[in-house]
Length: 136
Image: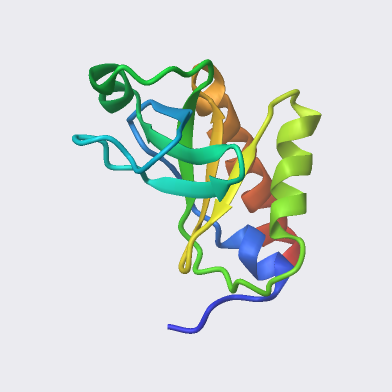
């Protein structure tokens, strides 16, 4: 399957999907503790950032202050595609929502405030439908 690079195609085909879980951002000084399976890790000079399911963080006694919903854009986006992150972040910002984006090899994953995740999903669906209408 070829990765999509065209912005209109990316937006029209993004098919956002909300994961039912609750995710948190935390940091540790060493490796991830036993029983914690991060969906994202970022190595920074200050420590290792982990994005993990809230229940795993709670069980491991990890501190956090942001609970997120995870939305996956199901379109296979090329890593060198231009504009997808900006378009999605702009749409959510217009609705007053923050968005933390992580690009995987196949898909982009958005972490949004958990209490507003359904609202974010609806905003992304609208953006996708508008883009599909302009593609024709």
